[in-house]
Image (cartoon, rainbow, N blue to C red; front, side):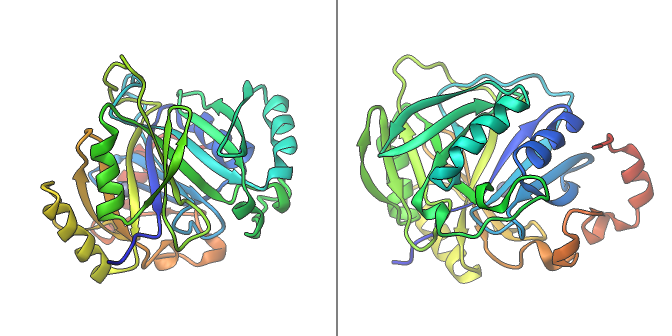
Length: 310
Ligand code: ZN
């Protein structure tokens, strides 16, 4: 049985765009690798951040839906988005967050790793985790944050669920994750075959209310398929587990299949290819507003209607 190499991307919902870009690009130092529109609603932004290439395992994407009310954290929700940095970089990040007036705290060590917890202005729960794997990956500098301290990509994500056994089956039987133990209220699952974006923690908080979607919440989590062949294999396993996947759809930068896992979280299977350099050169990623071919003829009106990012 082939395994998914782990998290491909995480897509979340943001509010005010200028503040948002400043936070993720300038303060956290992620590369804004793609400025495009929501393919289902081209009057709104879809912004992609990541490492230098927006590699699978590093891509954090946002639907910018200013009009949407704030969401509510709760059960049935991907909650903390954890970034991996080399452990010695944590000191830099404590200062960086303090210097920008972002409140943060050291969470209890988790599976032997140090964790800094903080949030963005929309209420997304974020973490920086000191990891040995991150230290083995070269960093990318935005010109401001030294490469050695840079965020390397996802450490992982915590899913808040009411019935962890059912989500655990999806992780292990569809994606090939392995359970590695319990720490406090977390059940940890790890994928093999990648250095980054390999961890999914399941957490049960007794009495947690059901989450509601809005700004400050995660929309979906995508898992990697090496290409179409593996995507179809994973899709078949989704059906075998009694769940209902969509047909494959093109997202221009990858091809996707979506399904809702038993606790109600939207999962996606996304191909590693072709990636973000398919429509603009690697050194210019994110410089220009990119539209899929079917919107290109309406570029002027679409661009004019988008809210300013800077
Ligand atoms: Zn997605």
